[in-house]
Length: 114
Image (tube, rainbow, N blue to C red):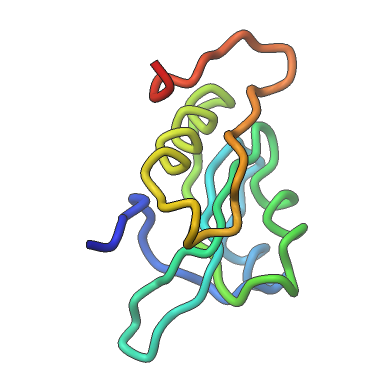
C-alpha cells in the first residue's frame, strides 16, 4: 500500500513554479519526487522548513522532478509532521535516512519515538 503524506497537487521543481505556488513566508512541509504516467506522485524525499518553505524547497532544484507542500502554523507543527512522515515511510525506498532534527532552540520531542 502506498503511503500518503496529506499533500494535494504536485508541481514541477523549478524556481518559477516554487515562487508561483509558495507565496507566503511560512514554516511548512514538503515532499520531493516524480509523477508516474498514471499521475501517481512517488515520494523520494521529504522535509520541512521552520521559517521559509519557499527558500528551503529551492535548495532541492535539480535533484528531484516535482514537489508537494503545505504550510504549517509554526515550527513545532512542521517538525511533528516531518517526524510522522519519517516513521511512516520505508527508509529503503526514500532518500531521507536520518530522523528529523528538532527546530533550533527548541526542546520538542518526536511524538512517534515514544
